[in-house]
Image (tube, rainbow, N blue to C red; front, side):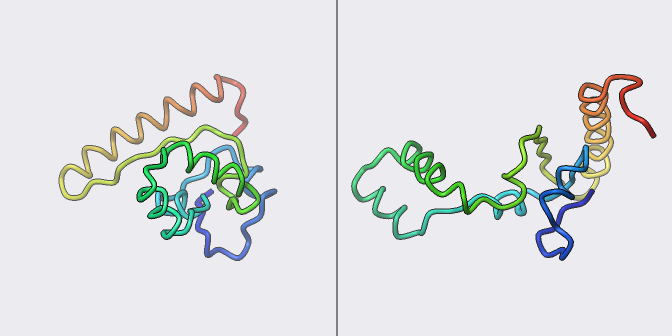
Amino acid sequence: MQFRSADEDNTLTRLKSNDIVLTTYWELCQSLPQPPKKLLEEWRNNEVNEFGALQKWVKDHMDEMGLLHQVTWYRVSFQVPTGLEAVINLHIIQVVLDECVSYLFPLGAVQT
């Protein structure tokens, strides 16, 4: 399944029914609630441990999570290159995806 937040048929049930979901890093980031910029500035100005404060903030705002963060699964992220490097890396990405599928779904466990 290819996930795009703009798709009208996005549901948690549909997302959970897929073994593999492809999306962009941008979509993944948009699915995670972000603290307001003023709050981030306040943390910096008050020398607050930003990492700890951010973890607490996200935990307190779990009800605002997008669909991609409401499912527990393995996430594999690839940087998308351009040019000749893209052709080489697309082959590498395919090999990595094949290995991930083989690991997650041992031989005979997936019906085609």
